[in-house]
Amino acid sequence: MTKPQTNAEFLSARPQYSQSSGQLRAYVDEAVDWEATHGLLLRAPKLDGDDWLATALVPAPVALAPSPIPRSEFDKVVALQPVFNQLFDRVARDHDFLTSTLESLGSADEFTLRILAMYIQQRVLGVWKPGVVGIHRSDYLIHAPENEPDASPLAKQVEFNTIASSFASLSSIVGDFHRHMLAKTEYKDLLQAGNITKDQLPANESLTSIADGLAVGFKLYGNTSAVVVMVVQPNERNIYDQRWVERRLWEEGDKEVAVAYYRSGYAPTDLPSEKEWDGRWLVESSRTIPVPSLAYHLAGCKKIQQVLAQPGVVER
Image (cartoon, rainbow, N blue to C red; front, side, top):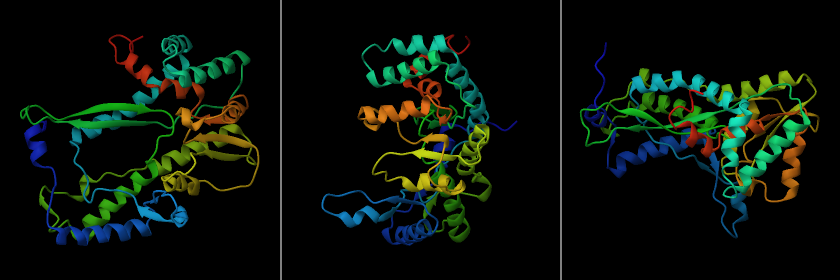
């Protein structure tokens, strides 16, 4: 068995960038050109009085070289993802746990309580859905404190997202960008320390996985003349993360909606008036498959994750 890497070894192996502006400039120029030709883009920030910026694009912020993750921790979190998916599915199906936990919020979170009330109303009415589709993202940071040099670095979960999980499309392209930079430059003159090899850059299939998941929901709906609708925020800068998913699916006109994919709706500002709440209820009270469902939306609340972290709760 391979000896676990220590924090000291992990931290010493991190790529260290050159501080020479001349050496960095060549890599930045290469990165900007590659991003522009491969759709790794954002809308430019909106500034008062600059209407032309509404169509201006900027490169998405990326690291020129990938950040290291211990392979053992990477393999661990990949293996854990189906387990977390199953856990949150069970939370979403546990009506008593879901309601009792979120009702404890009282008046502290009126937005979540209104989503909860919609979920309860949907349940009382017996609204039937052809299926349930979840698109989840689990976030981690590597814990490797310098003052514990002999300990092993660990992946620590930050949160689990069940609604509007963003950057799946662009992050998959970032992997291609790093493979390109490695193949073309071998990072010569850029890295003063650290080493990167091709086998350290795993494939990222998040873009195709999300689109394929939405396509499964579409098939479950059972009407090939229907469409998939993506609900987005106004003035969204991260639009191309969404457009890549759209391109994976085909585009149609105004028709019956089979799947409603929410890239918004997770904050009070996304539902500022009764018009938006009525639109959400229109989806939830119909056969349309929402991604996420109301139960999945609620299961992803931070209050639920706080309670799940308590001893004995997951075991129930």
